[in-house]
Image 1: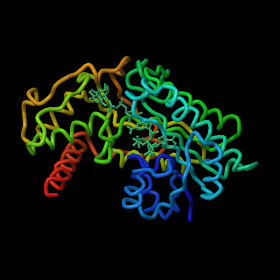
Image 2 (image 1 turned 90 degrees about the vertical axis):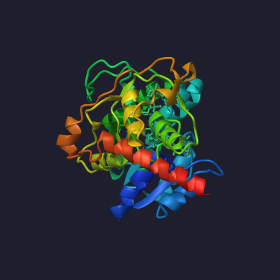
Image 3 (image 1 turned 180 degrees about the vertical axis):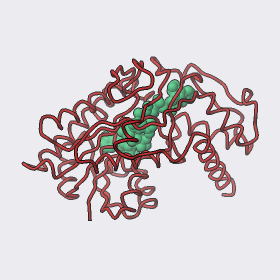
Image 4 (image 1 turned 90 degrees about the horizontal axis):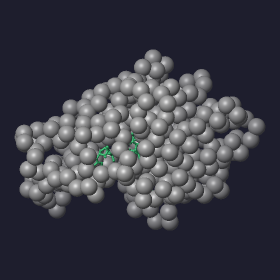
Length: 328
Ligand code: NAP
Ligand code: G4F
């Protein structure tokens, strides 16, 4: 039975990846931080097969201990401070977790594996946010990185450190440059979930409007359930490598609003949307669109859920969730 250790187990991707690996017969260990993490119960209920180990990406010895207990064949490093807006206000913390945390886990894997680094395969959750002020359209594995946020800068550090461990120590280390991926499990701080929750609540008469920032930014949005499949495929390759995982389509926040409101029968959303500079960023990533050709050709990966299906899935989930709350 193959064994995997996942950091970021309480997050959106951690849950989908756990489900995927459990369905493939893996023994799955998840790293959970804090002495009383409020999301522990969610993980235990959603993926009861996962064995939880306490640790933190900033605590090197906790990572070594987790590796020694889990004895993993594959390590998926999904843990991060992942909210871009928060990263300006907490830049040092973001650098420590999202950046240096990658070095900590890579080094822990190297020490754990002793002289045989090939016994552990490593996945790093890199991000399209690294492209920032995009230097090429669409963005591919070779596009120059130009991050626009402390989060993006920290991810660039983790990305190159992953490549460096592969080149320096021969580690099977891969980096997935994933474009935005969403789902009903997306945190409510991210724009898609903020909108799907608001649309559901507006439809049910529980909220009057939603306040947003920049409506013109464009993102290449896919479904998280599809993207974790690409992570797993990367670690099944003979060598570690970098892969862009994206849909190859881009949509503005306005497009997302159009679809989400139309799904509940509201064609003109203007009366329900306000804008506030509070939600604008010091530096914006205006356009992201990925070229997933390499992932298609080398990994045989294809997305299954398209943009209209994704928006409908998220709004339907939030309608059901809000109705459940109303019913008590
Ligand atoms: P998420 O829902 O925000 O989850 C982040 C996870 O990181 C949570 O489990 C969180 O645990 C954990 N974490 C935070 N600080 C930590 C620390 N000090 N030590 C260990 N774990 C820590 O993120 P996601 O959407 O699942 O994304 C997974 C990864 O992919 C992240 O690295 C993200 O940056 C990256 N990524 C995401 C996207 C996307 O569109 N979703 C795109 C590209 C890359 P707590 O619950 O304890 O806070
Ligand atoms: O949903 P967002 O916060 O996601 P963002 O910044 O693209 O980051 C996500 O995707 C990255 C991959 O490219 C990941 F690496 C990262 O971890 C995270 O998962 O914002 C998307 C866009 C931005 O342009 C933002 O300015 O939506 C715009 N936006 C407009 N109003 C808003 C809002 N974003 C948020 N969160 N809240 C708003 O009210």
